[in-house]
Length: 50
Image (cartoon, rainbow, N blue to C red):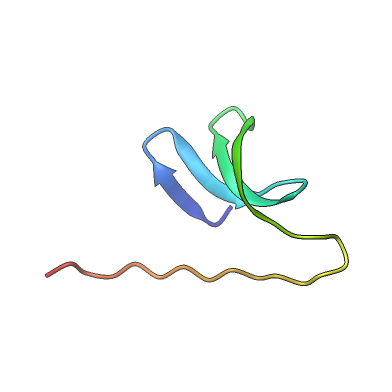
């Protein structure tokens, strides 16, 4: 898991790359498609809006 997308979904690795997954594990949407031979390691950072 990468992190929360909203209160009912997570950002997580999927079989096609990385995407939005519900809390039951169903892929809702693939955001980034990555082939199996490419190495992709996303990094997300929370920032304070103030």
